Amino acid sequence: MKLFLSLIALISFVATAHAEETLSEKAEAVAKSVVREVKKGANRAEEAACGKLTGDSQAACLAKKAKNRVSETADAVTDKATEIKKSAD
Image (cartoon, rainbow, N blue to C red; front, side, top):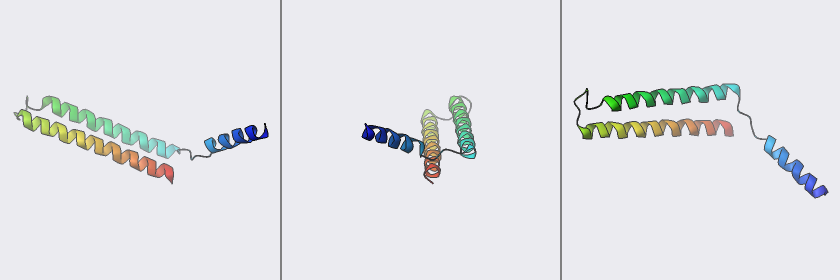
């Protein structure tokens, strides 16, 4: 029984020992998320208008679309890596 209680105490200690995210870190994460969403919306609007208003070919539009997706993914990965690095510190 003592072993069981000791194990529960250890697990609860380990679960609460992780670093909490500060308010400024949360605000920064939200701000970066908002910026990513705005860029994503702008990219989608540009893609919707591509070819219709600009006269670009379908290949050029697909190239822009692919470039936008790569850029969006790179931004998300960079932000997540920064967030993980800060939480590890």
